[in-house]
Length: 182
Image 1: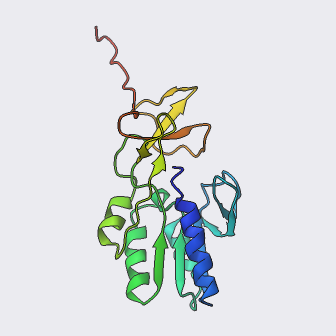
Image 2: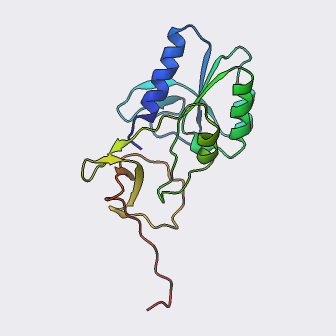
Image 3: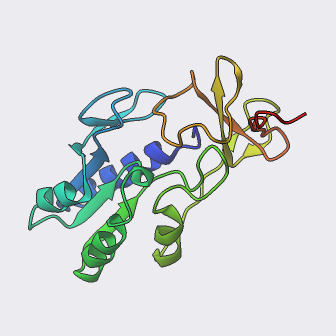
């Protein structure tokens, strides 16, 4: 979070459009934080996108003449996104995906580990730790100002009210005490 992934996706979409390529941008419909049909950065930069609920819906909405497919917040899609990405790339389309590689527990997020492994190119952006200012690679989730519990639901759509970028030293997570434990 807050590393510039959406900005980079928008930059690449615009660059392809400048090159007069046929571009489609997709986003998971679950991500409606700023706009239902736009990729929006935390700074308010916007780009039109097609919201989709499933990988099958995404597949159906790709137009035959599309040359560049960009997918925002790809971590929210199920693992069937991987064979679709491979198929698109194998048929000569440029495929650009953006997403978090780790969830708030610092574990691989959805299909991201597999997508990173099969990618022709990986650009890993880092944020700035919101606590100390160091480079940050971790998403820190808060609930009422306190660190989230390790067993809280993985997906919680939010922005600055629920998440912070944190470096390894400032990252923390709570574990619940087992009942009956001393």
